[in-house]
Length: 490
Image (tube, rainbow, N blue to C red; front, side):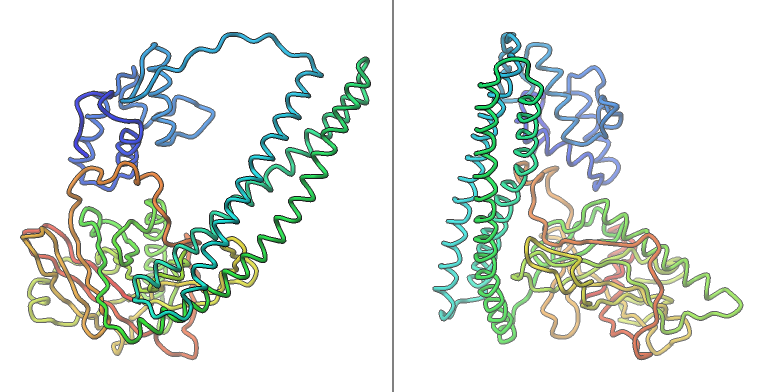
C-alpha cells in the first residue's frame, strides 16, 4: 500500500493497517520514523503523532484501534468525515425519557429479539457444520491429493469453530436474561402502581427465560453430537494426510522477514504468514536470555553442574490438524554466544563446525490433562523448544556453520537444511508497507497456547540422554549487514 497524500485518501481499514504497522515496530528505524512522520502530517488531529504514544482516554489503555477511534471521533466533531467513503453520522434528536414500566418493557422486548437472532445464528452455523461433516464423510474413501486433503480438514475445522462461536454467543445471554428477569421481579415487588402491567411483564420475561434455558440445553446437546461426529472424521482424515505425506516427497517453503531476523527470535512455519505476535517474540527473547544467564552463572560457579540440563523456552499447539507440524525457530546468534572474534565467512565457506555453549532442540510433550481446550477438543500434545547447556559435553557442542545463498533476482536469501527434511527457508524484506490492508488486523492464528516463561525451569534430560539437534549457524553475505543467525528445526 502506497502512502497517500491526505487522510481522506485512506479508507478506515487502510488507515487501521497503517497504524497497526507503526505499532508492530517490525521495520528498520528509518522506515518506522517515516511512517510516524507521515501519520503526523496527514492525521489532522491537534495531538498529531502523540496519539500513537499517549492515550487520550486515561481510563483505558492505548491501542491501534483506539488511535483510529480518536481520529474518527475528532473529525466527526468538526462536522466532516475522517476517511474515504465515510459519511458524517447524523445527530439523533433528543428523546423524552421513558417511564420505568415502558423502559422495562422495551428491555424485555429487546432481549427477546436478541436471543431469537442469536438462536437463528446458531441454527445457521449448525446447518453449515452438518454440511461440511457430510462433505468430508463423502470423501473418506476417495483418493485425494495432499492440498485437497488439507483443504477438507481446514474447511471442516472452520465450520467447527464458527459453530462454537455461535454457541458461545448464545450462552452469553444466560446471565443477561436472568438479570432482566430479576429486575422485573424486583420492580413488581416494589411497584406503587400498575401492578397488573408489571405482573404481565414478569410473566413475559419468565416465559422468555424458560424457553431460553430449554433451547440452550438442546443447543448444547446438539453441539456436542456434531462436535463428536466432526472429531471422528478429522482424526481419520488427519491419519490419511499423514500417510499421504509419508509417501510423497514435498519441499515445504518457509518465508521469513529480514527486518527482524537478526534482532529477535521467531517461530517459522511453512506458508510465511506471521506466527508469533511481537509480545510473544519479546517473551521468547526474555526466556532465552534468562536460561542462558542461569547456565552461564552455573558454569562460572565453584561447582558447575549444567551438563545434561535443559530448559523449555517456548511451548505451543498447532491450531489445525492440516499443519505439517514442521517448524523452525530462529534466534540471533549473539543471544547464545559472543560473535566477535570469529571469521564467520571463512567458517561458512569451509562448512565448519563450531563448539557452542548452548544449543536448541524441539520435542512433542504431553499437555497437562484437563487444562487446555480448543473449543470442546482437549489439547493433549504441545510442541516445545528447549535451550540445552553444552559446556563440558564436546560430543554435542558442535554446530554446523553454513552460508545463506543470495538470490539477487528475487532479492532474498535462502537456506536448505541438509538431509531429507524437505524444507527451504527464504528471507526477504517486505516489498511494501502493508501488503493487504484488509487482512492485516484479522489474520488467522496458526498456533495457540503460546507460552514462554520469564524464568524457565531447569530440568535434567530424561534417562541421562542428550537431545538430538537439527540446528545450524547461518552466515549472510558481508554486504547484507546481517549478523549470523542460529536456526533449529523440529
